[in-house]
Image (cartoon, rainbow, N blue to C red; front, side, top):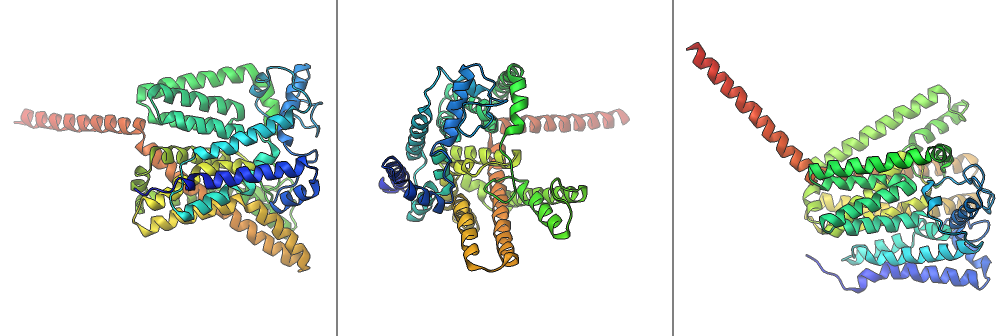
Length: 462
């Protein structure tokens, strides 16, 4: 097994930390113009009231909640007058009324902890891996998440804790699932982490599933009103911005087609909706077919089995979170930080195989991940550059549509690879293996009983 210099582990997270401190210094010293220009080049629109805007929204909700104000209906304390669209569990976590400037302190502190946590990811081994990890750590998605102080960076750290606990004793694995459930009740989509329970024996899996279901149902019963009012407020929007989702490509094509033929697109006419759902079904079938072919025709499963426990568990965790977000609904670009979990394991696949096709698959998908993590930088600068060229609206729209189409197809390819990884995880899990043995024994017993019955019939005939 290849080993790497210890310096390889620290290069990417250290560069991200240095960038974080440099931007902090620019803002603190009052050079807001340079700070804003750097963010815009990165593909990030600076917050209207400075950095850590999302963390300010959370602390504002805590302040108003302590005053007895219904923040789901209207958060009067929020700088941007936003309603609270997070899980009501967040409101239970406010131990006391926070000061107005608490958003800056909490946002900066969580951003720092998030970047420090990147030192704990499985290390790169080759120089090419170091380069890709460096680009990923400095990507638009990462900078956007930290600049906004979005609570997803807290979920990232909870997911990392889940991964480390999942590699240890049965008691620690139970703690891992508890942390995963807690993260799921905070932001809903991390409930996909409960799939890690497949690693347990059938009886233990059933007990964990029953306990998790009971806890979730109790949570829903206690906060049903807030959940029902908050869910429609979760971010959604156009199919052509930084939001990523399975629905973007089919519904974006339908909307584009509707504009071309002069049909109303908001809301989509029934013919366009039918077209969108048909494209969605075709994409899902294509992704399933790609997944099947990867598992059947490429030695992917052997290479996955050769990964270190750390590479394997974080590859699965990242795939669960990203695939869950992709199909659950639209996610703002910063949620792509979970690709940082996927990248180390994916690049390690290239080291664990001698098959050329699998190396191309792993390395190519790794490059694709980095490109998607920088996508918003490419998109915003492409639009700005096209505007300066004076090409005319039809040419600009064609170039932009081609870029958008490639981006969405790249997301579908990436998710197909992740589905193959998750399918292998399920097939190799303790639960599925034990059930397969039980089913195999039952089939053997049935077949033996049929043979014995036939023998008895022949004897009776004699």
